[in-house]
View (tube, rainbow, N blue to C red):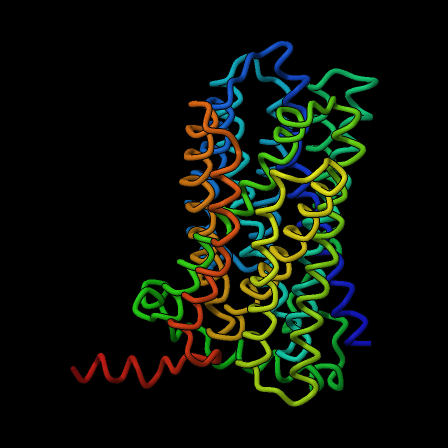
Length: 425
């Protein structure tokens, strides 16, 4: 029963992440239709991304602490309500600045999504299942992104582009009803019997023992934390380029129309879902086979990073093979992302998982801002996509090297010893 209940919670959390990625695909997929009423240049398009990511980065860092204070149940509810209304507000836009305000508000809401989801998974899953559960959750990004191009294209074929945003907001608001009805942390869930609670002791005990012992500000003192933040900065610079610029690349370079983007652009996201599930499953399987947590996570991370340079071939490939190359990159990225977002639960107590995940996500969003603006400038000045793909091909390899240097052994940080040493000094 308890295992079944755990996975029901995982599906609920996965659905929220799917909605998040659907919502953030609405603008990139609908941009061709929007431009008929609101002219948007490449540089303005990069500024719109920056507006989203600036708010996303700040709230990703701050919302982790907010989730730890409010609790997952109330915090995630507030976050979903906010971002659903912000997504719908894009349908009211009449100019690029108005779109930017809506995207800034959307970023504020969505910035709390992954910290809340990561903490919720930590409240329900032990270490040997956690990366598999996180893989399922991260596959939600693919579900939302796969659904977005065809559904948005269908909406555009029958309704105004404004309805893309109105309908997306309505889906998020509907999810909140499911959340209010079903979600409680394992520690307080009414359906947990004494036997079930004993089975989940590995999950519940750290929550009860560690609460209140580690301050959010103390996380900055540890190289394991700063290393993951830096690695996420590098890898998400590539990821945000892919998710924001793939439809526009197909429009600009291969001269796709909206229907063709709807037909092809979902394929890399389907591959991303496979990558999410595979990366998490592979790491969990290595643990079950007797490898240490440290080796299991690092082997899976290295394999994920190793496929990313294949994107270098994209500028010289026919369009069908371009989709294949993007699919490989998306699968590798989301396998990587699953594992990186599992590491906070491996390293810190559950009481600060939200805060740690928020800092890691902050680093990722900042990478997206910096590189997104650089891409806009490169394309705006006629340098083309070649230099961009050359850069993104190596970012994950550099990020993996950073993790190896700063996380010599992946495992729980000994906060008590460190803080005792600080106090003695």
